Image 1 (cartoon, rainbow, N blue to C red):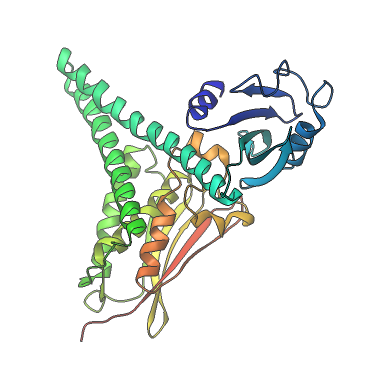
Image 2 (tube, rainbow, N blue to C red):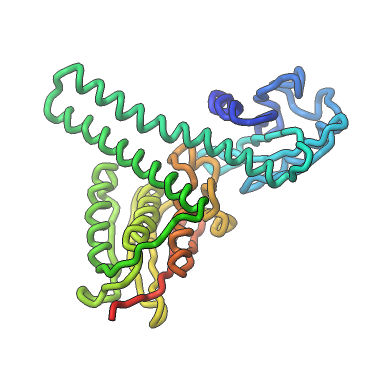
Length: 346
């Protein structure tokens, strides 16, 4: 944890502090901000009243980062608090970012600067991890003769890491197009059922490679084959479904994943991806579609990911004139829905 905080602190223009649940200061990237207080409980030792106010003002538990401002020794500081959770979804500590406020800049701007910097730090980690896997196993294969079984195993690891890296780069390129307002839909006629059949085959192989072939994967298709042609951007709809199904598999260890669609109205299709996985708190069902957001702080450490996939999926759906939402309870799975206007070919 400390090494992770040290890596993150390189991307923060200010102070980064980590407190445990009892408000004991565990880490600060600059001891001069809180001299002599590492390893001590704030409030039991001498500290300026302004700094006590800053720390206490940010102690309450939150599910998403919160911001505040406070004056310390005639300098106005802005802060952002992130809650850390342990494996049992219990609060285990707090990360507090503190930075002197510049003139003519509001706190919201600075907050997003810091979130973006944290995101860049996370992206660097997400890129290095699969690259290390690809380079390491490729080098291993080049230096020694292995049995056929081992070669296949190592080749599968390289292939899996390559696919992960490809998806990450695709997400980043899509995000840059969205930011620049240059993302264009290319609509064509395609068979919706065929798309879902292909995805089912792809993900059943994926689940086998992840040792999750015991999970049932079902399709629920309302339109019969031959009457299922629609007009949309097939690539973008496929990306949305890949993201939702991939998440369902990632967060499900047993049970069933069901993917399908129905006619919500005569002019609207409603898609759904239902799983029996870990779910999420009801407080996150709207926030989860924001950029850089994951259901809780533990997700990034245990499952990886950048928190971009759902935000990009939301952009694709809304570009088609639809909407996306989720219904979930923590520990009880999740069902993601999105709508798509029907453009049946004449």
